Image (cartoon, rainbow over all chains, first blue to last red; front, side, top):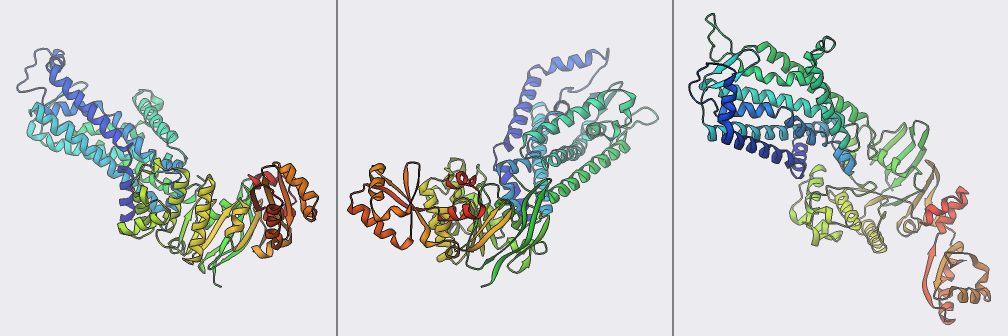
Length: 290
Length: 311
């Protein structure tokens, strides 16, 4: 398995397409940071405008705030970039004709599928580490640190700066599970196709469809909403919501709705396990005609 | 001789189409086994079943005396194959492709060994160039190098001369002969090019519509008295008239592509050649052709096959 995993990583990182995502993310984040550096104060003033006489001490537009803004903006883009690789891993090889060569080697199909999946997982992890480096560390270097000020729908959250970093670590871990779920969808669809265009477009369509269903506040869809992977992917924001005590003061180091996070992690894990098992099943049964 | 491949009543059904129909054959150690049939006859499906890419509907396959469904990995370790087109990773160099597939076959060859392998197929000079810059013939040779890198006992080549120019075809033919004679490898080669198979195969299996038509050695299948020659001269009409007025006229066949076709006993071909030269026939080419094709046409009684086999 280790041997196969090394080979799969070699293939993923030997391919120019792999670096599109890294390039796109770097460009996007740098542009956002540049924009906020130049016009950030205006943006911060606009945020405070709705709060009336709200006095904020310290730097509102700090590295933590910028990282949060970047992560919110990239909610849609990063899954699409992960899809580019995940949905291509099997079908791309079928299209190139190399799948038949790989599957005629002395490894079981389950091992090949799992090696490809783990390699996709490592790619996703590296992508996420790169995002974390650019969005968090570079932002902190450019904008400095201060308390994190967040405006939720009907209340404000203020997290002390020494209570923020671990929340980001948890949020990135959660994002990893979310992105692996997206990768699993692409991976599963990839097992049916003979070229990567179909699974890439279908995965993106599923993400868009599920997101729309999750956003529509209609009773008919509300029943399925908690089980859509896209609805559970946004739960990372819960790491940035604190519990309050009887005096309505934030409790440092607390998370407002931990059960929601655990519920989402379970749902996403079920998606991953089911989709990967289904991919193995499909590939084991499949006649390789490409 | 020890059987390397034993196939018993192998069938593959796709909905309404029976791609392979109760096919049985045996390939012995040291054979260059020609697997012949027109396009769509079931050759590639059979080969894919041998490599576990396609699951048989019925039948049994044994390789090296082991059942394929029970000893898959052990068996595949001893097989090198090029299946249809030699598709490899185009964004990698030939060297890196070879290294990668060697690892997949469970070996870690040193640079010297990889370069030796590329040298054998004439690609050493381009070893570090990306495969996307290669010609079809070079890719085909790289495919063969990949099939050989782990020193397999059995080599399976599916249509190895597809898309190659005459020089490329000759190179592959010489390589096959080298593998068989110098390296004592067992080869199973599928093709629809009968002339090519005649030149390299020790035994032949002809299939049509998934069924075995005939199996045997080339000597068993060909009648040397019925060797067909195709003659092209600078003036075919003049040469034809010359032959018609000679003792050779009994073997004349209807012309093809304006060339002269004549059936002779294999032993008399050198005399015919000398006679043509003596009579100042300006020979462009004289080739023994299609004896197997004729044989195929006889046994399948299918004139529709002519086009496929003469292309």
